[in-house]
Every structure is written in C-alpha cells, then in structure tokens.
Length: 145
Image 1: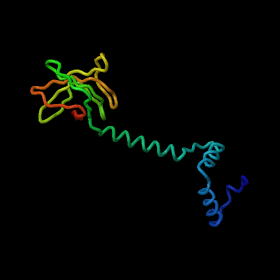
Image 2: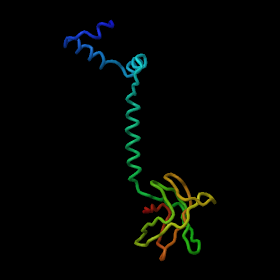
Image 3: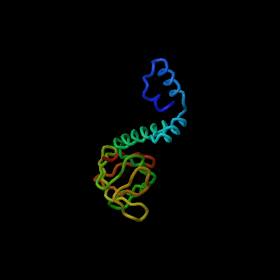
Image 4: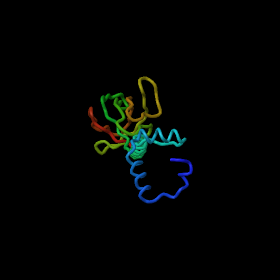
C-alpha cells in the first residue's frame, strides 16, 4: 500500500477483507510486523502468564498458615515440632487450636539458627508452648492464626 493509500477512504468490502487478513496472521507474524513498525506487541502466552501470576498472588494472600508436622519431641516446657510450612507463613507468637487446646509459637529455627519466620515450602523447627499439651501426631497439619 502506498503512502497516499493510507489517507484514502476505504470501501466496506476492502476494509472487511483487510480485517480478515489481519485475523488470519499468526502471532509470530504480528510480533515481527509490530517490531518493524516500532510497536510493542505482547504475545498471548505472556499475557496469559501475567494473568495466572496475578491470580496466584491473590490466592496466596488469602492462603492459610499451615504447618505439616514431620516430627514431635518433648523438650521440658516446650514441644519441639519439626516440619514444613505447606502454605502461608509462620511467625513467633502465632496461635493455633489443636484438639480444643491452644498452642503458641515461642521460637522458630532453621537448622541451628533462630529465625523470625518460616515461609511457604520452608522446612524448620517450631517450639510451641501450651498449658495442657494436646496430642499431636506425625503428618498432622496445624493451622496457625
């Protein structure tokens, strides 16, 4: 199409055929054309990935703080729980109810280092305190608030 052709009024049949040609172009051709014209064209798979990431962020924001127990040890005043955070995060002073008995997180460790919190998919040790110790078993999932 010539430069002057851009300013001519198109009849509806010609405009319709050009629209069909535009729809039939592959995504790759559109990207290459846009690059030549100086336009920024975002591929569909990138747009879909951004939407999926945004949805995951919203889900994570509403996720519960769940700790899956892999080991239980009685350490005097505390119960030492080893395990992994299934979802959410775990911080000091968070509370949970296990068998109608309250437990409170006193200390969190990764290896031998004391940390402030455990994030999702992190493995660590949690020291909890309770007035009356509940029965906790391996593979229990405890939801903290």
